[in-house]
Length: 386
Image (cartoon, rainbow, N blue to C red; front, side):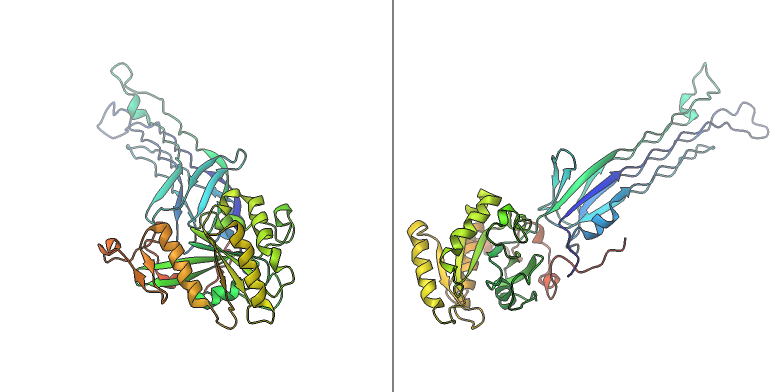
């Protein structure tokens, strides 16, 4: 299993400022040279930045302690001490910084570009050398300031994967197979439950102007909101999605109650998830009796949710996948107000989004290349160097 970490507790400390220097000029033929002690250097800052190629908090969790360098002490001849080096902590998009004790939200990285930096803790200022204390009545001051101390904080980092669509379903419902069919992601697929143990991301190419990011969340089971199975620890990764895609295995004996059970587990995690627009896929209709079950499921859902779209599909047999693709694109497009799609997946627009010919993406994906997600499972596979 590839390394995965969506939470990390770290301790960060900014650098201490350097001390000022007490020094006097001592040159031949220069009587009463006076003070020339330099100032201490500034301590290093603690800085956070977003890196698109960072997919997990694993390296941060294993290192844990981050300390900026202290500033150098001042020296004679008015030489300033060297400023301490900053410590820069790279986090993936979707990371939230909280106080480890109070859980107070400090900063959330969602729309920041890779160029932006967040200075969290500033290093201490360097102390003044004795040259600053010279007055008409004190020609030889023997006073200098000490450098100011750095700051310390204990933080909780939480990662929520940012995607447009979140796949929700019981184990072995076909979520990974759908992700494999629509995108270049290659999640593990096997005929037994819990083959997906970490979230996976894939990119569905809508057209030349937009890509749709799909997140495959590890399967939940009945009682997950109370900690059964893998629990609901991964559901936070769909908290920022535009919509949800429910997948139901229509060949399962409990398929008629599956949708209601899934909604109950989501509500146990957060009622906001149920307010998101969603589509229900009745999968495995190629199996005997499954298509009839799909019809019954659709009828039950229409009674309480007439606007919810229910689509019978067979991912293995490639039945109904084009309709699912169009439905996904329409859902995301509706949320972003960029027009609609035809049954063949071609965009129909009012032309407003064509005012600029640049590729349209949102948030942290503005400068992301599609290839950056290709052939890799998210979170990343890099091993910790610490």
